[in-house]
Image 1 (cartoon, rainbow, N blue to C red):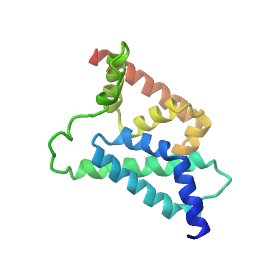
Image 2 (cartoon, helix red, strand yellow):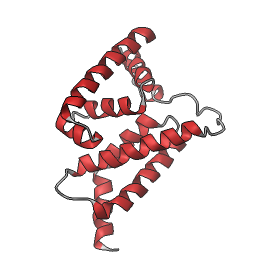
Image 3 (cartoon, helix red, strand yellow):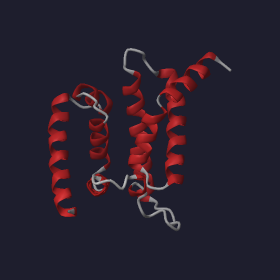
Length: 165
């Protein structure tokens, strides 16, 4: 195994959960999530030789993963696959606890599901406690633009939650 391969495998193992979160946000079915995961890994492998260590590795990973996820979603939207039994229902609710907050959490997942691709990226990064500076780096926009868009996404989520409730 080449040194670059070993480094890459260690990187993926260390940030597996980050990639999985992106896949869960943009794909409903297990098969689709696995396909997206593999595509993200492939694109990360292709981009790895060009990674510049001056950027945080998590910023670079998010940037590649989100770009692949959004591109994949747009491609699937343009050419919808034949629906398989059960793949059209979100399985996010299946993973929720049955505690008192389960309904609120399920409503939040449904509201997030109604956001645009880019808005979902904002929510994911916000929930990951990424700073506005890091979100700006990942999404390739200014920090001021992040603040404005984040405020708009929060307002939109509030509206969606009142509609769902």
